[in-house]
Amino acid sequence: MYTIPGHHHISMITKDAKTNNYFYREVLGLRRVKKTVNQDDPSMYHLFYGDQTGSAGTELSFFEIPVVGRTYRGTNAITQIGLLVPTEESLLYWKARFEEYGVQHGDITNYVNRPALHFEDSEGLRMVLLVSNGAKVDHWESWVKSNVPVEHQIQGMGSVEISVRRLDKLARTLTEMFGYVEVSRTDDEAVFQSVQGEVFGEIIVKKIDGPTEKPGRGSIHHLAIRVKNDEELAYWEEQVRSFGFASTGIVDRFYFKSLYFRESNGILFEIATDGPGFTIEGDIETLGEKLDLPPFLETRRAEIEEKLQPLEEE
Image (cartoon, rainbow, N blue to C red):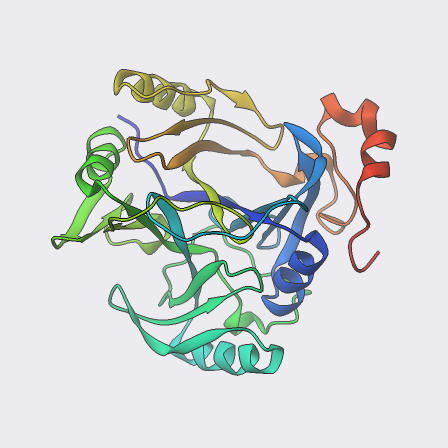
C-alpha cells in the first residue's frame, strides 16, 4: 500500500496579480518559480511561489480572476495555511517585518502546540507561521536571491486548516482512504498527519456549523497532496473511485500529473505527482522570469500574452 508523503501545493484566488506578485516575492521573500496561465482558462495568470526550484511541499499557487468579489467566510472550506520557519527567533524577525510592511498580523502565540504568528495578505488570505524546529521538507532549497535572510526563510507548507460541518466524514476520508494518522481529537477539532510526527503533511479539521463559505479573493481553492509518480497516482485514482467519489481522472499538467475530487463536505482535493517539476523547461537561474506555457498552448502564445497585463516589475 502506498502512503502520502505530505502536501504538494495549495491554490488560491487573487483579484490582482501585480499586488500578489509583490507580496509573495518582496514581503514573504519566496521565489516566483512559475509564471504561467490557468490551463483550463488561459486568459488568467497562474502564479507559483516556493523554494529555489518550487519543490513539492513548498508551492503556493494563485489564479488571477480580476472580476472576483470578496470572500464571505464560512464553513466547508479550507480556511488557513501554515508556513514553516526555522526558529522562535524567526517569529520575532517576521513580526518586525510585518510591522515594517504594514501586514496585518497577531501576536506570537501557540497553534497546535507550536509557537506561531498569524497574519493575512492584503486580500484577507489567512496564514500562520509555525516554528519547524527542523521539520522542513527534506528537499527544501533556500532561495539565495531572497531578501529574507536564509536563517528566517519560509521552508514550505505546514499545518493546513479545514473547516467542515461533518468532521467524521472528512476524518474517514483522510484515515481510511489515504492512511493519515489521527493524532488528537476533541468534540470540535481533530489533527491528522500523513507522516506521523511530521508537520509538513498535517491537516487540522475543525467542526464548524453555519453557512458555507462563498469563495472570492483571498480564498483557498484546493489542497494538493503528494504522490511520487504515475504508478502511485493510478493507485490513488482507483482508491478515490472505490470510496465512491467522482474524480476528474488523471490530468497531465505538464509540470506534474494529477486528479481532483471533492469529499463529502465539498472540500476539493488534488492528488499530484512530484515530477517532472518546474525545471522541466530549462535553466534554474531564470526560473519564473518569463511566461511559460505547456506545449499544447504554445501555438497560442501571442494571443495569450496580448490578454495578460504585465506584472509590476516588467
